[in-house]
Amino acid sequence: MIIKNVKVYTEDETFVDGEIAIRGGIFVEQEEAREKLEDEEVIDGEGCYAIPGLIDLHFHGCKGYDFCDGTKEAIAEIAKYEASIGVTAISPATMTLPVEELERILSVAAEYKKDAAAEEAAAAAKKADLIGVNMEGPFISEKKKGAQDERNIITCDASICQRFLDASEGLVKFVGVAPEHSENAVEFIQKMKDKVNISLAHTNSDYDTAMEAFAAGANHAVHLYNAMPAFTHREPGVVGAVSDNAHVNAELICDGVHIHPSVVRATFKMLGADRMILISDSMRATGMPDGQYTLGGLDVNVVGNRATLVSNGALAGSATNLLDCMRTVVKKMGIPLETAVACATKHPAKSLGEYEKYGSITPGKKGNVVLLDGELNLKAVVKDGVRL
Ligand SMILES: [Zn+2]
Image (cartoon, rainbow, N blue to C red; front, top):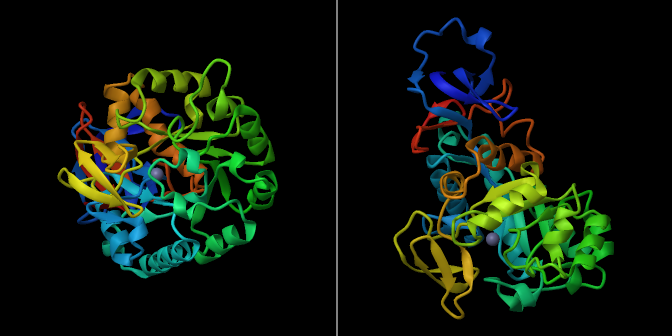
């Protein structure tokens, strides 16, 4: 496939006029593609932006399905919807559920991944690739539980964590902890950090405790600002500790509901864009009409892109998708498009350890491209060199 007449997003985060060539589902050098193959599909991009396929590393579901439904059908339907809106690789999140149930959900995901690898190219191209799982619980804090069910919260336990990693056959890429909630948190982080990324998640930790966790090897913060103490001038909390640790990446939910635009702008300046990862944190109502849904077994009301628990009104994930979040960041929050694209493609790919295959339009990587017009409307999605 040739995609011509586009502004191509490059690895150094600029747009360059040009064309893109994909052969056998993989980006190839322009020279290799100069000789047009017979019957080769050519897309005229009409001056659109051509960006890498987006990667959402923290969301729960969409189109009525949730990753924690624990069925291959749910994962497949989620993967189809995500690909259709330009999110071509996914790392969905688990909720805080009983250990055995989480193990079962993770083993279903591992099976799904094996089935997907054996699928014909044309069928696989229609679905986002499952490249990770982000565990938001169960090692979190009741005090900042958000929409997580506190009955299933437990303290850090390396042998249980290992069971999760084994059940997922390596798919789990992030495990969230509230370091103040477990006496053995530092020991746990030191023990697990070389096997999986450790994130601070749903935590009431103060600055010092968060600093200890990052010194022990934690390297990621789950939805910065949400489900953690506020950043104030005498108590900087987790946010201050993230700012002070250059090795820590931070997720941001930029749906326009979870974080004020001014705080988003300030955070990009404070941390530097290279550490920012846009996520949707979407729940099953995404892509569906307003109404009542569930998240982790709890009832949730959805109106527009606001999802709240019926019981106490707490925010319960979002009802938007990553492409919309990226657009919101650019059009309503004043972050440059070149920066926002990196935060939805390159940075999540690096964080997942998958930048060899995903996250940029580079020869040798998977041929996943999203075309957006000047107003950032979605014009086309190409997955594995197939136009969806
Ligand atoms: Zn979440």
